[in-house]
Image 1 (tube, rainbow, N blue to C red):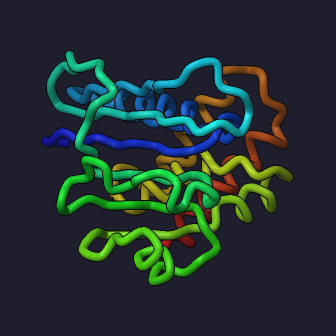
Image 2: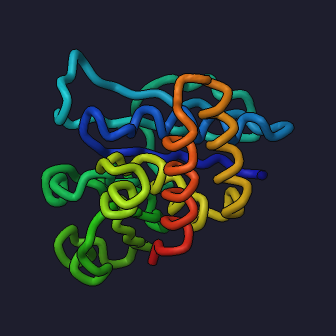
Length: 191
């Protein structure tokens, strides 16, 4: 890794955007000579309130802890936020946008005015419902992000997240296996 990468996550409280941002940072920072931070900006949000989270990656120590960034990648975890949040805010000209939606890519580009950006779609809600029994799109979106960026292979991201979940020691094997399945499926299905 030889460059800085800024990622902004948009979701709703309870969907795991904050957890995803921090998980990605933890996985990335295990690499020698790579620094990462994952954080969020929110108040006393209730489940369902909009949340913004951030992941910064760099090969230098990260001293900037502000919420302002010009992201390289924006992830939209909740399709009901389509059109409600400005995913293009600060997005670099060659930026990537990954959207959790059942709509096809052309519809999303048109709806959000994302012509000229690299746009990817994945139905992370369906994937998480199938794998976990609930619409918690964070781990499928991590899988999609890994594929789009090339930061991790499917096996690396799946193994890394599973190891983190096992290390926490609070999840039953069924949840761990469901997260593995969700990551791998999203990695394969992101378009």
